[in-house]
Length: 253
Picture 1 (cartoon, rainbow, N blue to C red):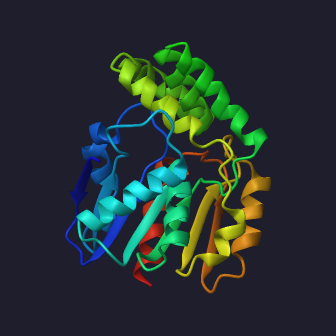
Picture 2: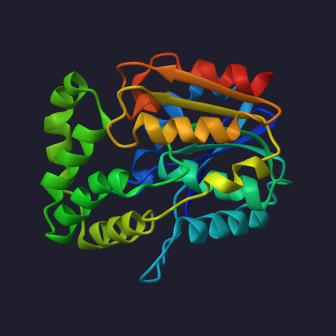
Picture 3: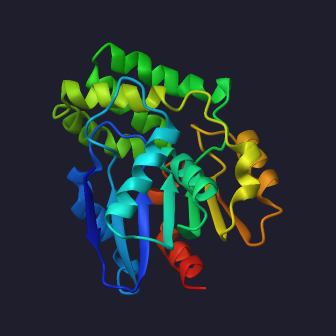
């Protein structure tokens, strides 16, 4: 499992990224730049998912492997941010290993991937299984970003698609299939740490109904906060200008 590390602070934040067409490690420098506002106070670990994959690989499997990686790096009582797929993984970790997580940030994620929600992921799967990397990148970008951002990013996405390998597509398919029927709603009450849940009202991947169910299940937690953006899309963690500052405020208090 590859990872990168940046920042100098005493606090530790582990970021678990969302589903992607390629390894996040290729964008490590850009991620470090995007999160530089946090790096004075926080040391950040950005985790990729495991390199060698079995034929089937669930969110729970990914959570198990992340815990092994944390133990290998001697990381405990960490702060964790999970984005989309990474949010599902981080919820699994926070419920099964509450002793590991000090604070949890959930961004644009779902605690219950319903049949309706999986339709968008299934559309991506259909494109991926045809081996059409360009269409996959474009469908992915259109679902994640507001329309104006997507239009500006089109040429970049088309260019990036040219570097996608057969292995990249196979990995994408394995991770995407592993999201089907994910449901941790009934276990959310087991989370013991403070939680900040951030999403956008215009998220075209995970709808408001499912998010409201997550909020309803978490409302009884001792320290649960919700912030709802409007107009930044599923990738609000990239597109909202004050997202990192909102993270920092939560982590420092």
